[in-house]
Structures are given as C-alpha cells and as structure tokens.
Amino acid sequence: MARVDASGGPAGVDPESLWSVVERPRRGRPPAHSRAAITAAAVALADAEGLAAVTMRAVAARLGAGTMSLYSYVPDKEALLELMVDEVSGDHRLPAAPSGDWRHDLRLIAREQRALMRRHPWLPAALPVRQTLGPNTLAVLDHALAALAPTGLDAQTRLEAFSLVTGFVAGHMAYELAQERALEAAGRSPGELLDAQARYLRSAVADGRYPHLAAALAEPGGRDRSPEAVFERLLDRVLDGIAPGG
Image 1: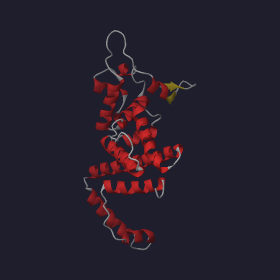
Image 2: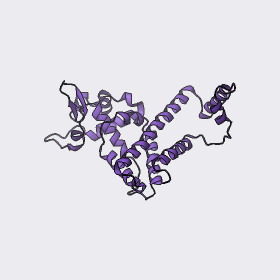
Image 3: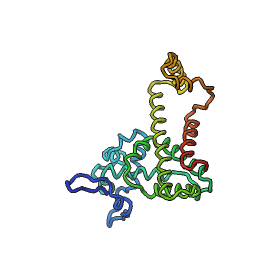
Image 4: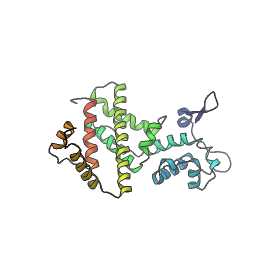
C-alpha cells in the first residue's frame, strides 16, 4: 500500500495494492480487526475531534487494540486517509442515472458534496492531499461524467469541469466551516458579524479611497446571506462557466 523509494523513504500510496488487493480471511483464529472497522473508527475519530487527532495510536485506542496490530491491515496514516475519504464518499445520495438536465444533475452532486462535508468537517482538508481514487469515489466520478454528457464536452473536459465543481465545493466549505468555528469561539451570531462588517465597510469607504467598493455597497441590498443561499449563488456562477448558454 505504501511504497518505498530508492532512498528507503516513503513514496506515497500505491493505488494498486490499496484498492486491488482483496482482504482475505486468514487460516486459524479469525482476525481481530478488519480494514473496514479500522476505517470506520478513524472516520468517527475525525468527525469528533478533527483530522489532526487521527493517528494510528488513537485509532487503535478507539478499537481497544494495540497500535502495532493495525499495521497488518493499514500500513500507515497516508493509506488510512485514502480509505477514510473513499469510505465517506460512499454516502453520496445520488439517483441511479442522471436525468439528462446536466445543470440539475451537477447541482445535485454539488449539494451532496456540501452535505457530506458538513457531516464530515475534516473532508475539505483531506481532499487536497488525497493521492488516489477508491471505488466509491470512482462511482461518483462516473456519475458526474454521465451527467455532463449532454453538454457536448469531450470526456477530458468533463473531467476538468467536475474537478472545478469539486474544488469549488471543497474550498467554499473549508471557508464556511472555518467561519462557523470562529463565530462559535467568539460567541457571536452570523447576524452580529454581518452587522459589524457592514458598519466597518461603510466607515472604510467614506473618505473615497475605495470608489468601486463604495458603489457596490451603495447598491440596494436584500440578498439572502444564509450559507445555503450564498453557496447556491456561487455554484450558479461556476456552472455558468462550464457550458455557457447550456
């Protein structure tokens, strides 16, 4: 699963051994653990305490096992992270087949990604360091490529388009979740923060140094500033760029 380079150091995760080697039962005494149970314990730990809390020692403690006993199932934390990402990717609630309306279908996938990241707040930080794609992730990717087929884009461009959407969702959710944590730590509500920001910005543009920002602030308000509404508006702009006029 984890490879070693010529210098003897780690060389990342080997996707063939991670995903293609089937876990087989041993002869004699049944195995004390399984890769699935270890992965589930790691996901639960990350959900409760954050990604930094996930170590082989901490996962072993959660299972009531010795740390070294886990290494015959999962060789290192790099491989464990790959297993965790793919495990939660299996929670996407998607229809059996796309509807034929690519915007509707891609919006549904993006909403599912957002919901998944809210259930597993560590996921936005895990995705940028992921090295391979497991079977659950591949199933979502294949569904997205099928959903994008009506755009008329070639397959490689559809891959890039879905990468763009996923990157937007992950980046936006990292910001959204970080803002929520900051508000919670400060004991402030989103409304209180928005009011404070508005007062500050009105004061900042009053002397004319930021004319374009002043013009934007002078426009009539009324936009829904809830996290869901902001996400939907930004997602619309991303989708507009994939196949303009589509």
